[in-house]
Image (tube, rainbow over all chains, first blue to last red; front, side, top):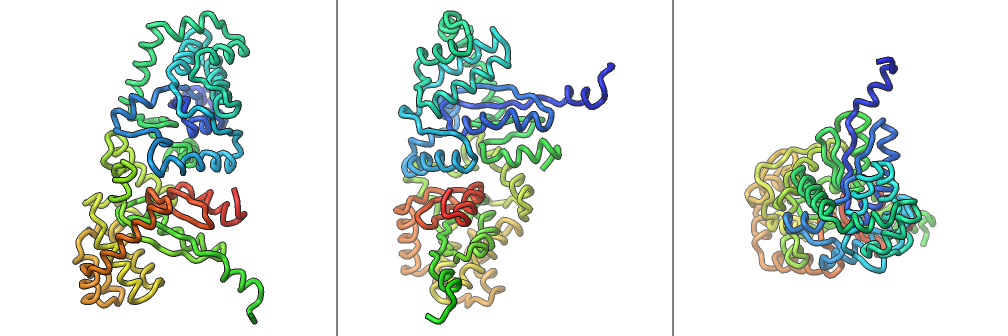
Length: 212
Length: 212
């Protein structure tokens, strides 16, 4: 009650929900920008690792890179978009990969060490995959990344394989789909949905003006 | 040989190939911007009406608006993107529609009255559909639009149904697919491909700098 109005207002604005799959290059691009963008407009970000596999089953979609003709263009667009936005990017050798272990790992860290640590870990996983060429589909590599971040790797290893974390990820994906999420990155804020890193210009206009 | 160098250079830069389907809202958005953008960088534009139907058969895609979950988002995104870019837009009552007649009509006008007249006609068809709510899938409405533009409507009516124009459209679509076109809008310039109105920022950077 003794906080100045501006500070109280900042606390009241709802967080931005940020959905992403760890094998999504555009999700990675978004991950390099979302926190700075949100901070500019006094918003927090809740990071939601999801799996596009079950989502694509519902929408009848396929991973971009596997679609005839479109696939070749996509690989080119990943690299060109990275250069255009000044984002470090190296095409991963293994692509796409299974991202269940990575998503579960982040959920486990969030539960044990809080949102800030989980976000930092998620950023490190994305960088490992899309900059350093590490196959983050392998739990072993997730443990190495966690080790460098001071995460309890024994706990993390058990956590990735635990039934509660598996259940939690499934529930997270179901909830995302129920909210209309069908791709990566996907942002929901104040009931407004934005699909794709190429909608971040509209997302910023919405955060600034409260409407478009 | 007596032209100043700058003028000669302008003539030498290759035209931009602009592919679009008349039922594509993002194609319409692009159509409102492409000529001005090209002129800014001393380029001509060759307008290529194509049909996404045969393209989607090859890529296994479906019209955006018919995909579960994604469809609802798309209609919202059409309207929001139009507002964001300041483009007049009204959701058509009939959507999507067959665009064979419209594409053939533009090809016929191009053959009989040249590229400039065909481009002007194409813009009027897009506006009729996405601003005035006219079902351009009906040849009758195409003839009305043509009539207002001083086009010989008897010739146009015959042209839309003529075998040579049918063959020409089929060949145009085949050629587009052979060049890697898989959506609308799609732009190719100096061997570089750009899919989507949301890549016009990268297209402009490429036209300006010759690279990204």
